[in-house]
Amino acid sequence: MAKIAVLGAGYVGLTTAACLASMGHDVVCGDSNKEKIAQLSRCSVSIFEDGLQELVSSGFRNKNLAFVGSVVDAVRSSEFIFLCLPTPESSDGSADTSIIESVAKEISPYLSPRSVIVNKSTLPVGSVGIVQDCIQRRDVHVVSNPEFLREGSAINDFLHPDRIVIGSDNTYAAQRVAQIYAPLGVKILITDATSAETIKYAANAFLAARLSFVNALASVCEAVGAKLSDVMEGVSSDSRIGTHFMQPGPGWGGSCFPKDTKALLKIAQDSGYDFELLAGVISSNERQFDHIAGRIIAEAKSVSDRPTVAIWGLTFKAGTDDLRESPSLKIISRLTKSGLSIQTYDPTQVDVKSRNQQTTNFETALAACKDAHLLAVLTEWSEFSEIDPNLVAAQMRSLFVFDGRNVLNKQLWNNAGFTYKGIGER
Ligand code: UGA
Image (spheres, rainbow, N blue to C red):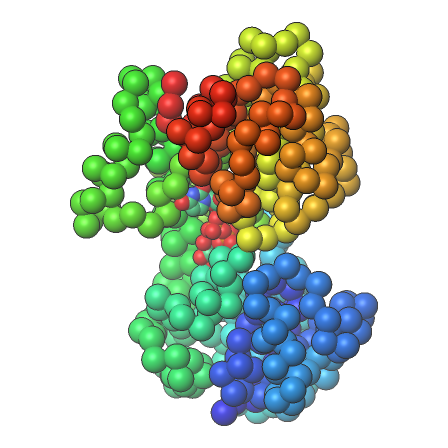
C-alpha cells in the first residue's frame, strides 16, 4: 500500500483522502487552514457529503488517515502527492492556477526522491508542465489524474468510477499511479498529460451541453404543445442516446459546470479555435434562468399585483448544501428584481441572506407557503415529492405550483386543487 499526501481538505481533497485511506493506503491530508485541520483532527467533518464523516472516522480508527496544518509536513515522507487545491475562475474565464503554483514551489525542496505529484484538481491544459516547471526537480514526475466526483455521491463516484484517467509523458510514473487504484478493478485509461487534462473539461462541457439541449427542447415542447416526458422517453430509448443526465431543470449550476465550460471556451480560444457551440451552451443556460423566472413572474402577476412566491430548494442540486452558482438563487434574484416577495425553504437550512438575497427563510416547507400566491420547486429534494399537497393548499392564498424539476406528482396536486405546471408544459 502507498504512502500518500493529499494537499487541500476541501470537497475533493477530503473525499480523496478518506477514500484512499478506505482502500488501505496510508494517507496524510495537509491544508494550511489551521482551523479546518484542528476540526478534522477531532474527527469532525463540516462538509455536507453523504458518508464522508463515517469514512473519515474509520480512517481514524484504522490509524491510516491523519491531518496536518502544513503542506510541507504532509509531503516529507510521501511517495505520492495529490494536489486537490482550489482553481478559482479568473476575470477572463480561465482557471486561476496561482495557488497550485505557489504550493508546488513551497513543497519542492521537501519532496522525497522519485515521488510523484498527482494533479487531481481541474486544471487548465498544460498544467502538468507548469507544475513540473515550478518544482524544478528531475527526480519527481507530475501526472494528471482528474476527478469525476459529483457532490452528494462523491464517495460512490470515487470508489466505483466508470473510469480512471491518468495522463503523463512519463509512462513509469503513470503506471505507479495506476497501481494505487488497482484494488478498485475498474478501467484505467493511461494517456499523455494534455489529453488527460482535456478529458476532464470535455466531460463536464459535454454533460452541460446535454442538459442545455434537454432544457431547450423543453421550451420547444412548451411552444408547440408536445409532451416533454413522452418526447424524452422516445429520444432516450435510443441506446445511442440513453437515459442518464437528461432531467430537465431550471438550468445547470454548481462549482464545476459554469467554471469549467467557461475555462474550456477560453482554452480553445487561446489556441485559435472558436468553440461557438460551447459558447451557445453557456448562453443558453443563462437564457434558461430568464425563461424560468419569466414563467414564474407571469403566473404570479396574473394572480396578484404584489405576489408572494414560495420557493422550495436553494442549493444547486439535491444532496448538497452548496449554493455556488445555484440556479435557484439566480432565479430568485430575477424574481425579487421584478418586485415579487420571496419565502424560501431548503432542507439543509442554508442561509441565503449572506448572498444578498432579499428573501425570508422558513424552517419547514409548509411554513414557507403561508399566504403565498404561487409555489415554485427549484431543487429536486425527495422531501418535496413526499409532502401532501392538501396540507400545502391549506397554507396558500392561491393554488398554483410551478415544478421546476418535474418531481411532483401532477395528478395528486391537481386533485388537491392546484393548477400544476412543469418544465416543458405550457
Ligand atoms: C460535476 C460532474 O458531474 C462531475 O463528474 C465532476 O467531477 C464535477 O462536476 C467536478 O468537476 O468536480 P457536480 O457539479 O457535483 O458534478 O454536479 P452534477 O450532478 O453534475 O450537476 C450539475 C448541475 O446539473 C446541477 O445544477 C444539477 O441540478 C444539474 N442537472 C444534473 C440537471 O439539471 N439534470 C440532470 O439530469 C443532471
